[in-house]
Amino acid sequence: MVWSAYLTMNTFDKLPLDERLALLRIDADLITVIQDKKLRVALYRLDNFLVEEYYDHKAQRITKVASVKYLDLVKYIPFIKISSIYNLIAH
Image (cartoon, rainbow, N blue to C red; front, side, top):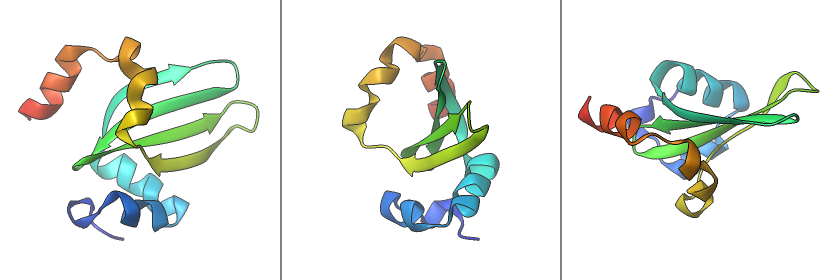
């Protein structure tokens, strides 16, 4: 297992899915979740970058875990509370 402190976005995306999931469970901070009938997308902070986890309700499994480009974050703006960001930075 690779420790998150040494990861880059590119390195993270090349890891096997089970290792990416393990890193999220151990080292990541959940920021917010967006849900609809088909998908649940969770946004995490992992060290110095952000990661999305896609859960497909119909398949009942996680279908994608990947780093996020900052331009892709616009969809989260209505769901993020400033206080939650402050708490992540302050700790």
